[in-house]
Amino acid sequence: MSCTVIKVPTLQIMMKKDLTVFDISADELESAPVERAFTLASDFYTSPQFDHSDKKIILGKHWQCVGHISRISEPGMAYPITVAGNPVLIIHSMDGEIRAFFNVCKHRGGPLLDKPGSFKFIKCLYHGWTYRTDGSLRGVPHFDRAELFDKDEFGLRPIHLEIRSGLIWINLCDSQPEVSLDEVLAGVKERIGHIDLSTLKFAGEIVYDVNCNWKVYADNYLEGYHVPHVHPELCDLLSFQDYTTECFKWYSLQYSPFRQKESIYSDGSGEAYYYFVYPNTMLNILPGRVQLNRIEPVDHKRCKVIFEYYYDDIESESAKKKVADDMEYSERVQQEDMDICEHVQRGLESVAYHKGRFSPKMETAVHHFQELVKADYKAYLNT
View 1: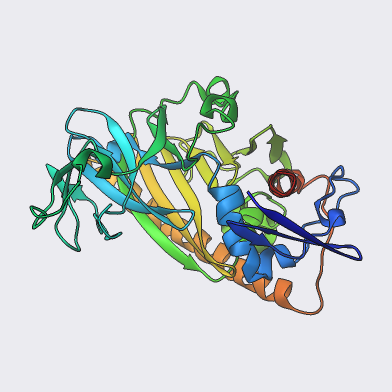
View 2: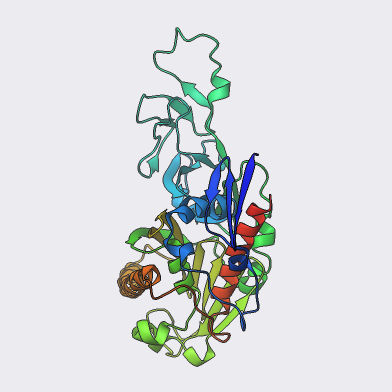
């Protein structure tokens, strides 16, 4: 890969064939303990150049959780998603395997699926090419005069997919991912092994459009510092003085016992576990339910946050009420987060801000996330 380096005082501008990264000085990528560290500079959240860079350098190479097997419980079921700006489809193939492909026809790039459904074959919405659920090309209308055309060379492009405890994880890497999923999730099963995630049932999905950089939303999720000020109702549920954060190699965990014996999230037992798996997967594990959230960047100052809801029971009348109440409550909390994140985005874009500091007590997971962002950029710039 060709690379040109232009050196100017304190500034490094590197141009690569597949990507351009601007305005990263060596100082901006230095690591430091949380007690002495500065936050990422505001350019990481406000510069358009970082949007494409983030999708390529970070989101395009790490594992992301994109759903649960209960979403596609029967052969032929499939749903489309977007990952690192790429159209993707998740499908339960007719042979029983769960697979992921780019949601892109190999003819001229047309879309295959635009909504969830059940299919014996996947048909391009543009020119009608059809694919089997294993990704192989089946039919090509009006191609009888095409010369030297081999259908075997035009199957859908597969994506790395693995399943753990019913959760579906994918990785967009062309080659074998640098880090295995087992390494990423090391220790999670041992910590929450008493909770069976594999039997959960899909209750619904809500997609939020948020006017902030995806990393602003991640930073916000990764600390309870703001909870008493932004989420007073949630603060009443959790025992804030017992709120604990732990950081591991590829993920962080925030957890808290419930303050109230009975609440919307608790029957008097259990804890709230908030896992963040780098770079953009959030697993809120609560008694009898899991909320799976994923942040998908749109551009440098907009993102989508996908909320998926899973429960032990979604059929009984009491369960249906629980799901409805849950979603209503979650909607209020999410609106509070959206409002504050959009205010933060405006603050980061102002002339008043460049970078800040971390609370060593309350923001260790934010620091952990930002150190991983820096590490990805350093690794890229050193290749």
